[in-house]
Length: 161
Image (cartoon, helix red, strand yellow):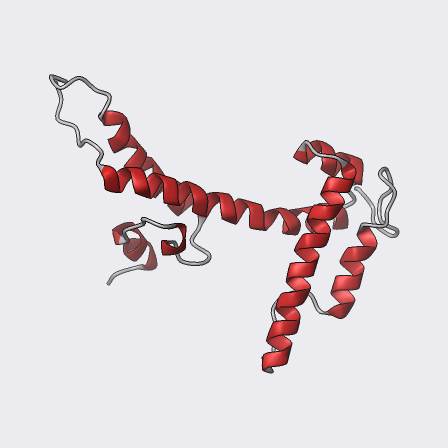
């Protein structure tokens, strides 16, 4: 029986969109490592005493596409993690330090994520989906309320314990 992981391992990746949605980062890293190892073998001398598999253009393209896919996955997840941290009592100063950006930059990042999630919800709701994905209007307002906190404030009612 072929598993989802077996299918992934056999999949050729040449573009970021070749990576199926929700493919675990660990799987992407494993595939990246396999291609990257072959590319590194190209730097070994021609008379290297052990048999090694050398990289080709497909390996190079796969590494580039996988890096972009992983980059997109990580970028997409930042808004979710900002929201999680705020719900757990993080301050904007702490978030900005963790991202190495300004507090306003962190707020902008959360707003953009929330806008995208709210648009996703509206799109699914307009299609008549029974359980729309994204942030409904109340959830959206709750997320935006976090952006109004002062830099060192924790949201009301949240304990950092």
